[in-house]
Image 1 (spheres, rainbow, N blue to C red):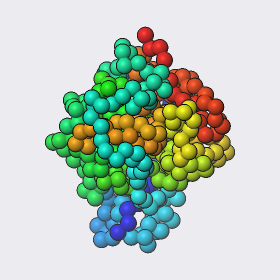
Image 2 (cartoon, rainbow, N blue to C red):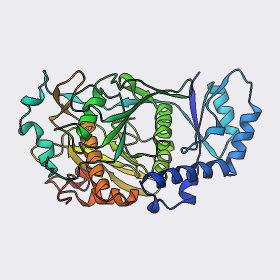
Image 3 (cartoon, one colour):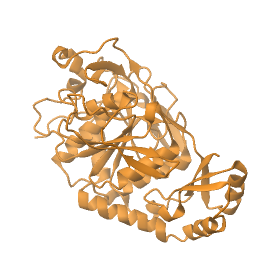
Image 4 (cartoon, rainbow, N blue to C red):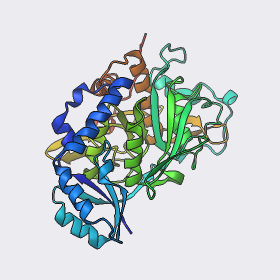
Length: 402
């Protein structure tokens, strides 16, 4: 049977909380997560949902994968039911959106190199991505004490550049409604290891002392919106996480999911998301949402990569451009499964570079709010000689953090 995601149409959290005050410290994160969960649990709208859930208990064509009793920070119920039952449900729950689950894919990169390089054979030219963002390997700010969740295909923790940097590895079983802890951090495809290296990999990473949590959200490159929600709940309930990196998405604007991302800001997590690799006028959710930090890709000639996604979005009387900024994403070397380094193209490569810069800024000033951290990243950008609608506010810069 199909899976459906049920969530209120109204933004209950933003009606109750000011997102400008949400901090990223451990204690703040714990408190803010509890506040968001309480808002959903006590809201009168959910009395209708709970009553409906009681009435349909025991039906053979309905199975709760995430029940209304466990709304969490996303305020969602996830249910397996027939299409006919979904139509009936929509007629009964008029204040809720009922979204059929969809495939949530890896944003497929171009793999430029035909063979891997060793660490010793990497040249300064191969590390151009660090120079382009004005990053020095001798930088005293290294991301220490900052934790980033990588929702991807997994991470190969045995790679020399990543050893000791992954503290938790999980996979998501939506059919059982479970987050399964893994004994070893592994990668089901290779994509996540390349992403992780650009965040904190030795020599290649922007924030080499940052810590990673490995969430295998898109095993072998394919997941679902329901998996995405489960992954965000997992992130929210790990209060040490301050940044979540998402180099995956749907090739469309999915309005029903935008407020789920807004709830991540409310608990004190900054979502950094790839815009996509489809070029002009094509973007991906969640990388095209207002409330994320949307990242496009640039190259070593100071131009926007030709396949970096960009567009003007009109939603609910608001107009804005995607991406918000760009980072190196063409011919970028990073770690690959079973050791070695390869050069890949994609906004998937640019996104972890921005996550790494965010980690540096947060280490430098841990008392920032989510909004302040986002603004600092945007204010440090350098405009390229390119149309503004393709680059947002420009190429992200590290600069002086002394």
